[in-house]
Length: 234
Image 1 (tube, rainbow, N blue to C red):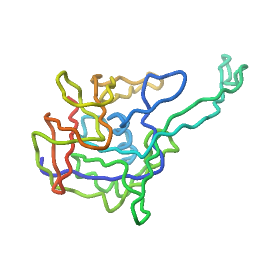
Image 2: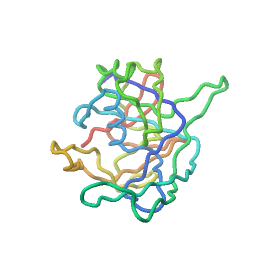
Image 3: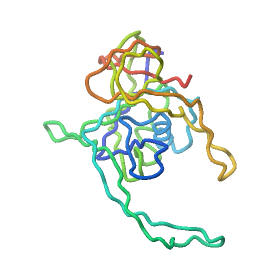
């Protein structure tokens, strides 16, 4: 592969939520999961995108963490109707990322860059069918039109990377957040049947900042000198 599709996004907030925290406060990971980004890609295409259709890498950065206090409406099903729960509402603390950063001219800087193997999808990102969001429905993103382009890349064996997630293996000399996640999810055809996790494993999330030296497969460098890991779902 010598070319990829590069897409940059900016916005105000994002919520790359830490999964499996079902009670108490909602927490964020340092970077979004591959399954979340696959959903973001599918939103732009206007359909479900499966993991075997595309390989992609990403770089994510944010300015700071913040917290919001929300009121949740409790509901219950009485066998016939959904109605307000007798216990009423409760308060819920939610962590999110502030991703809005501006340059000297006051323009928003990209918080998320995607590199995709599908260069034929270029028009779906220039004219997305859905409204892209990263996390919750209010975490809207803007696609930087001029950033949607095909760029040349070359494979490399070693690179400094950050703002991404790498499959973890013993002996990796990097510091980051260890999380166990599924690569992707497969939707069942029957409504209400849930989803099937694809290839659950441990990832190490590398926060944006000073890059960390890694030597793994599927490392690439663009003609502008940007290095990234291209996830291949294996």
